[in-house]
Length: 317
Image (tube, rainbow, N blue to C red; front, side, top):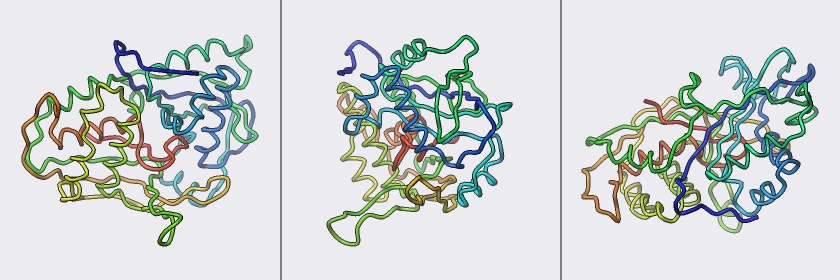
């Protein structure tokens, strides 16, 4: 299947919450992002097989992200359950949510169409997702910009660009990023040195370079020039962005085959230096570009395995 952005169509990003209800009592591993990724592609395979096959090719899985299944309990006990891999109870009397983001505008109508074409029974008991042995039905899709939980929304890339352009970023401006699911960055090389390893800190170079690469992978050609990766890399190399505060905690979750290490929490970055002159070829200053990337990260996630529940983040006000 070939999906291409129309030059006249605005590029949109979507963040949805899906409210799910289990069909029966049971338990589920506390971190299920890997299972949700597979279950979502399986659901698409049954309802829109050409879309599922297209997404599964190469690196196109990065055109969407899935969260872990959200349990209605405080974060600290949940993090403890994730670290110790304590399976959590599921009740058919309760609803649970997962977050799905779509990073290509054309995917949203296809997702809508797949929902409408699903062969639900009159009492809506046909399972929407299967996670492990647990079956869930879909009760609601939430996509408003004003949901009190603050994790849904629709935006245009042009809107994010204009918002960044109109933001006057004073010298030593700060950005605080909140990493709400385990986040990490994979570094190293299997052929040289000591091999791959996971970076346990949100270093400015890793965070913003990761977001810049994500920008390149999702924007139409007409917007690619807005974020200038080489200039950003040089700015970061010269310590233009530094960490001045943080509230981070080392964390790990259990995938089906291995333990994944990373961190959760928040980190504040100071953007140093004076504003440079903009032009049609470079409509945003470097610091405005970093603000734009931080705003985009709400939809794209950051770092490693964002399609499997890792790297969920947002810019704090």
